[in-house]
Image (cartoon, rainbow, N blue to C red; front, side, top):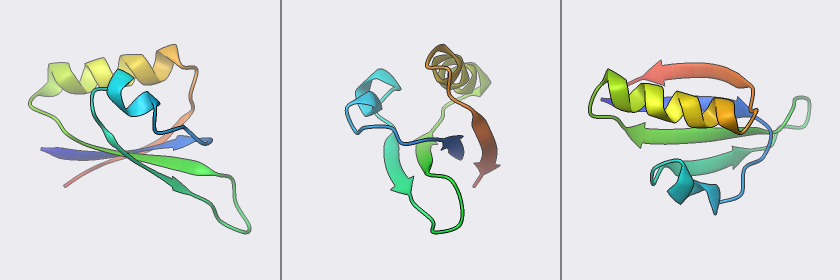
Length: 68
């Protein structure tokens, strides 16, 4: 499954490998906060929890998770 996770703030591309080779896009809007969108193909729920653990370890605010 492909997951799209949106976190508050701007992450540098160098974090991609630490997060497990996740594709990252920074979204800047005029009226809202800066968000980083993380897109990853996740094999199973355990792998998803690993990504979520790393987001927590970075003290990032998870805004949303979408499944495609």
